[in-house]
Amino acid sequence: MANMNRTKVITGVNTRLSYFHGWEPVSINGGGERYSVSVLIPKTDTETVNAINAAIDAAIEDGIAKFGEKKPNKATIKLPLRDGDIERDDEAYKGHYFINANSTTAPQIVDRAVKPILDRGEVYSGCYARVSLNFYAFNSNGNKGIACGLGNIQKIRDGESLGGKTSAADDFGTVDDDDFLA
Image (cartoon, rainbow, N blue to C red; front, side, top):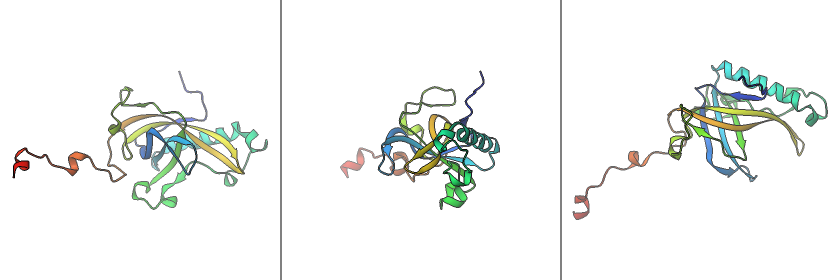
């Protein structure tokens, strides 16, 4: 059955995760705890970028009440799709758009065969994944715009870790019993 939700997008397979907090919620900028991820979308993935722009337009239409019953000019509200070349001084963001998505409920995290991933080391900042995103209007404390909710995550493949984190196997060699006797 086709997805009829105009504000929902499933990203392409070359989407990369950054600032991944999908296993445990964290507090962002002193707010409530949320599951979150920065989703890096290659600028060459025009299918995903076009789908996101269409979903943002649908969220604006669906959220007219939040904007005082008048469709706002996109230049006057906050939008979730941002340009990594302009807004980030980070090599991983070059050539990408990015979206910060979050949720108060944990995402389902699955592998390529849609089987739950239980090993928390399998999904991390830097791996490639498909992500379900839902866009919605907000008007809070004078801030108006479109936000992005985090749905579920499907890991596609490994990638270089973005957090500089290394594995224990990379940091240490094995220690023989003879090393203790010397």
